Amino acid sequence: MKKKSEYRLPTKPMLYIAYGSNINLPQMSFRCPHSKVVGIAVVKGWELEFRGVATIVPKPNAEVPVLLWELDPRDIPALNRYEGFPHLYRQSEIDVELNGKTVKGMAYLMNRGQISPPSQGYLQTIWDGYKANGMDTSYLVEAAARAYDYASDMNIKYDESLDESEDEDFDLDDDIQMSFKL
Image 1 (cartoon, rainbow, N blue to C red):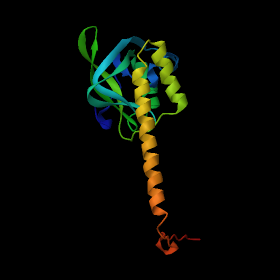
Image 2 (image 1 turned 60 degrees about the vertical axis):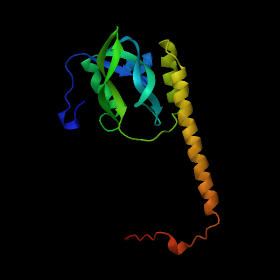
Image 3 (image 1 turned 30 degrees about the horizontal axis):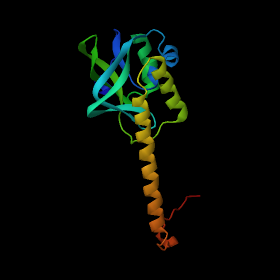
Image 4 (image 1 turned 90 degrees about the horizontal axis):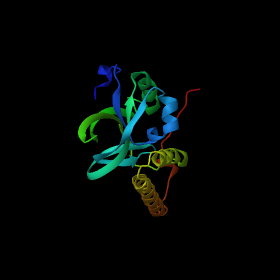
């Protein structure tokens, strides 16, 4: 949307695209008590990804189910804090189909990070939101599986690199030396 220095809190309700823990109704009613659900939609050209927490990333021929909210301006500061805006997540406008028309909605997209699995509690929060809203959980299961597979592959590569380095002769003189002022 806008650069950090240009950001101004909206004064009118805005369409918010939730794809992660903010599809959990009790959680959102606590955090955003003045906002209301508009409906369920599918965002095309994006894929759900976990980097410890959820984000969506552009991917041709992919799609992700979302819950649309009419976000009340009074709730935006609390939601921004929860999302770590603008450091962890940024706000971006994304096209979404609503009532047969393409409209722009705001989604929080992660600024950086690498694929990593979510915690069990965080995944359960999202699962509960999917189930409560009648959303297809296969998207969630596939995204979590990709994250766990990626982490497993990284662990295997790390273990293999340790196995290879066992043959190397380590010399303490090669270590970084530190000195402290007393």
